[in-house]
Length: 203
Image (cartoon, rainbow, N blue to C red; front, side, top):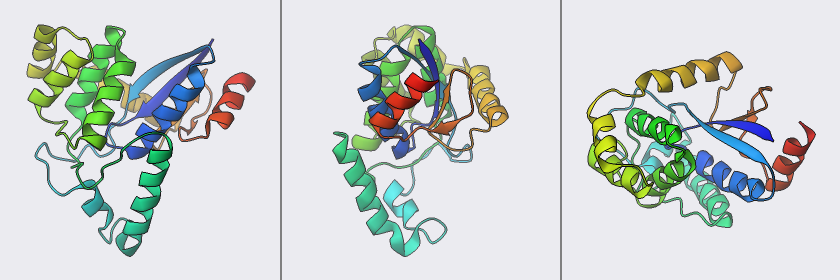
């Protein structure tokens, strides 16, 4: 069985596309997927501001090319059955979402937790820095309500998030999503399913 560490962040639409492609491949292969925490931008605050689409239109990002590139990104998502509503998603600090993911991983619910977080942010435009939103998502993922509340109220699993981020840096995983297959070098997590199948088979 191949072990695949996926370094990803809820805020990244490519992480959503990468997860869906990975889902397609792992359904027919023996792959042990471990979701690892990397914050796309740790400097973000906890209060939602501009939408992802507005941020992408900033001259410091895509500027005048934003509309076309957003359309391409949405089309790639749609091809995977995803609704990437960048006009609804508002980037916020994702640290607590990662802490919740770490808790879910401990309970064997990481994959379903990641799915709920990605859909909530990219499709529904939910505020994934809001503990009330995270509480609901944790419960939907099958986690005990009282324990989710305790995790979110404190600082539990913060050290695990930081450890993942240090590990990503040590491995040279400089973008999300990145895949590390059986401890090898990081590669892009956005690969066509046929490429992923070959990679998993060749390692």
